[in-house]
Image (tube, rainbow over all chains, first blue to last red):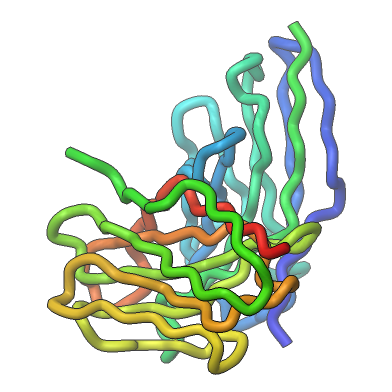
Length: 115
Length: 116
């Protein structure tokens, strides 16, 4: 069945360091991938997305890398700040399938940034 | 522009009772989704509305859960009767109409449901 999982449940970094959060997925039909950030008491907030025809996409201080060969997704955060502390979820979607609205989420990684 | 809103923010009910959760999507968003996260598990998809129609309800756990979106605006999710395993956080999300999944889903803050 479909599943998206994370290698590391927690990540602790110093302010200013770069952070890398990893995610594995199993559904080879997935063609759209998203990273969400969730702060305490709030819902998941979109960070960045990538389609399966791309290997890399950059945003402001964030980069998502997609390796379809090994079904691996990563989120890189440059110059991590205390405000980046949150739970990060990867999610995948088969945008061309009948369940095109269904996001499948990973378990989440807790990122803690120390000043 | 207001985001996705959900009501109530927290609900505590006894096993066997009924609870109705409400979601107001972003204005103009035809797509509305329900997800939930039970303790220790990942966020799971429940169902997807396009306007007032159920596009995909493959994630609904059983017939104790009933989702409606009359008029294609706000949606309600009723749990009747509630069981202990229904405890968790219920999220609603909405997105623009595209006919594909390639539009950002905006999430509400969630309703924390506690069944005792």
